[in-house]
Length: 301
View 1 (cartoon, rainbow, N blue to C red):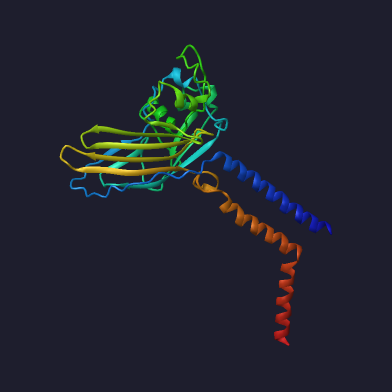
View 2: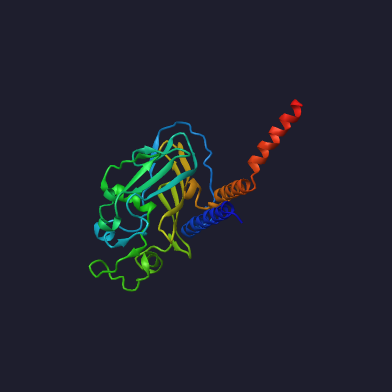
């Protein structure tokens, strides 16, 4: 076996091992559960009058500095870390808009959360270490508190530092999700802790006939929001309807939804790369060239 053939085989093996390593990390980080069913608010609008709704954090606890200071996040949330979500479904009446910061959302938009610095160095100043972008344009919030609330729905903490200075959580020392599952201070009718995910589901009635339903699913390994389903029905004082059905899904490698494995991209690349190595080893390209030249020579004769 000559050196070129040995080099080709080693190249294939090295490339394949790198792919397997990358894919195994991706599969360990991302949950594969199925998003919930959707509804369609297909109702006509008699008198369109714009209504804008901003989605903030689930109403669970006060996002105070004392609370933020005892939280810990996933180890990958360090400087320059970027996490993306994409609007998967957005059906709405003409007079209804959802916003993120100062940006009105539309179908197909991408939301990016960028970690500017290590959160552990300044947990309470969320606006300094985390920024939110809509289609790579910074989404600005009217206040620091609203910025904190916006970020908190994308990134759930993983650990909670039990201290006597806060509240006695000595019975809930198995992490933040363990606290949510067991603490008497948490509304367990809206929070559900499963083996791989944490689900928040809440229905809010603001006025008669006005209803908002929101479901958030967080990955327990990372604390990242997997997907969001948001349904809003609003009838104003004149009886005119406004509403929307909205879903947001997290992306991972190659811009794929977290429910889709990156193997759908890696397998064709592996096959192409392997075929190229085999073709070079068998001198396929030289043989094709010789065949064409022989054919042209035969035609001239």
